[in-house]
Each structure stands twice: as C-alpha cells, then as structure tokens.
Length: 241
Image 1: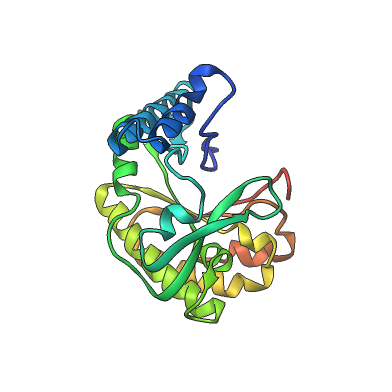
Image 2: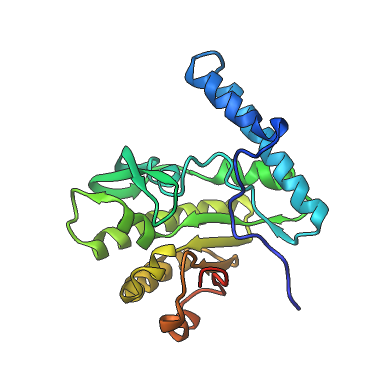
C-alpha cells in the first residue's frame, strides 16, 4: 500500500494578501509594534491553514510546514549548547540563504526544540503529524566549526543532541520522525559518517518510524548503501535527482 505525505516545508509567504499575513506580522514585530506572542499567534494561524489544506487533500502523514523556521539550519542549531548564529550564507545552489551556525564548543542538547511545535500541529490535524529535523551531517557541514576542526566529531555530537530531541518528541507522542540529509547529494563520500550519526538517532527513537530524506540532487551512486542505512523509510528527490 502506498501512503501519501509531504517532504516538509511549505512556503511561509504566498502570493495573495491573505497568504502574506505572516510577512506583515514579521514586519510589525521588527518595528516593535507587536510582541513575540503576537508573532507566534500569526505563525500558528498559518500552521493551521497548512494543516487544513493537507487534511482536506487527504494527505495521510502531514507536517506543520515548518512555518516557524527561518531556515533549516538555525532553527535547531540556535537552541543547542555552544552554538551561536552568525550572518547569512547561501543555501546550496538555491536563491535562499540561511543564518550560519557557529560552533564555539562541545555541542549538546539543552531543552526540547520542536516538541511544542509538534504538539500544536498534532492538536490541529486530523492526520498524524511527522516531526522533521535537519540531519547532523547537514547541520555540521553547513556550520562554521571553531571547535572540533573535524566534520566527523562535530556530526556525531550533533547526532547525540538530535537523538535527545527525538527522544523528547517520541515521549510527546510523535510516531514518525524524518531526518533530512541533503548534503549527501553533494558529498556522497560522507555517507559512512551520516550512517553513524543516524544509528545514534535511531537508538533514541523507540517504536517511532525513522525516515531519511535527501534532496537537491541525485544519490544513484550511493543508492544501494542508502537502502542499507538504519532508517525505516528512504526519501529521494525525483525532480532534481
């Protein structure tokens, strides 16, 4: 049986005036006209609209659209110990940018990062909500490392931290966890490190289903190895890949 899902994020801001409510709220927040609580309410209104669209379309496994994420790197990294957020860097070969994490010391999990967002989404969805995390190899590869001076050590500490987050999500009730590793389309030679990181995350997932997703290119040269990774589901990009 084939089930339907979405990869993860939705556009935060659309083309119509109604779809630009979040842009207006962000502008007002930047001017000091509304509070952080008001901005969160505006974000959550968009999350509810995103969930409603997926529910109405019959999607069986939905996401919150990652509406509250400024980008795929800083949203998680900024809540980890020893990580600061710096200026903008280009995200792969897209026309979007991310706030680059800077690692100043040993990375560690401090507190739940996505749990409240997942709980809100699940409360407002008829279908199961999938929690989506940027993978440790991608986080480590796109960060500015001022401490480890080695990708593997940083990736594995990030994997330990993400494992703690996955454990918190599972305790909250999440039954589906997705880990995104788009960096594998650019550096397939790093797959062994990605696998070692994924094994550490898998050890904390309990009975939840674990999905590994790649995108922004093809992974045909490592497809057989991907199938053997410790993930229950593999997601592939069939547009750019």
